[in-house]
Length: 558
Ligand SMILES: [Zn+2]
Image (cartoon, rainbow, N blue to C red; front, side, top):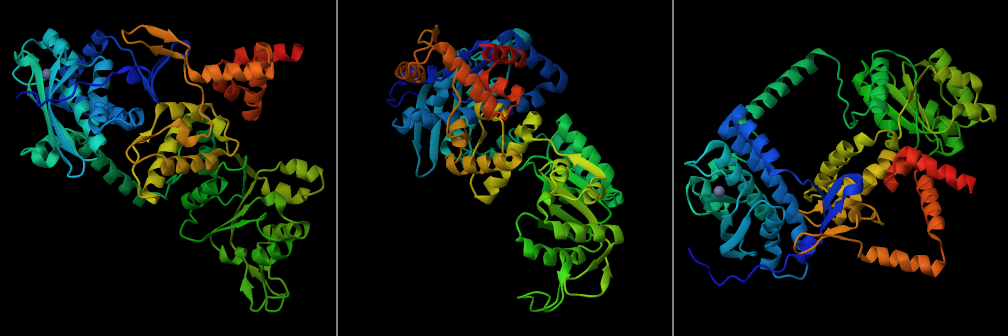
């Protein structure tokens, strides 16, 4: 098939500008995506070992999906990079990035699409495919096409770009003796063997089978044991595992639990999980926030009131203790409980009986109390705001819930879980979270903890255009600085020349700041924003902790 007067590829200068080498911290970026500069020989040996271990078929599928994942990520860039380009110019971001990334040389032979009708037909010639090169070297001439990862990339990019499943086939491959490879792409429905093609992009049947068995096993286990479902509690960090370990041990017992931790760490979620894991799971979980109710209402809320006990008490009503009978009562922000209510609470805990306001009879209740506080109860006792005897009664089994900056490795799984949740809630699909955004999240101090992360992810889902990846700008109002080394047309590295730097320089001049003063200011700012956490501040500045300590020491000595 011959060319249909296709315009040539536009200049790829805009794409080359997206590549940033940040050798000082060991990273390379393509816009928001972290990239790797690999040796073809290294990747080739991985490919060869895969083939030798799991066979041609499985390797083909694995590599197709890996390529697909890359194509998907590059598609998110296409419209961002060329917002004013023609649809063809936006589309060619895919083949042009594929070339820039060193995968293959692409020459379009035929390309026609109609965005409205959702029709597509593309034919591209491929030269210098990296997969042909390593495959011929390792296995000699072939009878079937071998550009698996490349085909996956083309399919992933085109699918994400047009928002409908478009898959490619290699009509001919240079590994089979042809002069070059030729690929053809069509919407899935236009391929006669669509089902078979699509199978390559689905989880392996063997893996699916294992997952099915795992699910069967899990449900069997559930029927044998009390529920140990952590629900929304997600994490694998040491700090998190430690709290969960304590929570598990407490669940089986009747012990009164005190949850401590900064605001937003998810104390109510921990309390709910404790309840769900306990033998009380089938009975009510009742929560009350001691700071949210006016002082004169809190007692009637907790302990109930008889008819006419106070102005407005029209009918007798049970308090939360009674409603939680057999189950768990969660007292949030316990430190805010007024003195009179503290005395009554102590009595209920001692006797296991409640007396409604304005009542004369006592009622027996069987309630496990879980209290939570973000204030230092010991300090509140010293200051005379909290009863010492009540503190001892509640502080039998304290569990400290770590702040988000103490569990940095949990940020990514948490963010991805929240992303799924908010995509469902707002009925919108985004492609995921860009590496650079994850990186910025790991450096941030999170004064509002998990709740703040949740707010940011929701904002990200709302702001990010459908099908694209949530990037730093969609999460944080101020983007972190990007590394300042880029690639020139013939591949040479260029340093500096960014607009950000020149604005910063002008600002420096305008304010008459010295370089030392700027450094001191930035360091102090980072420490302040990290809430005094030096590790987080060091990460934010791209320093190691000892480097930061050294500089702080120098500032203090000045
Ligand atoms: Zn090929």
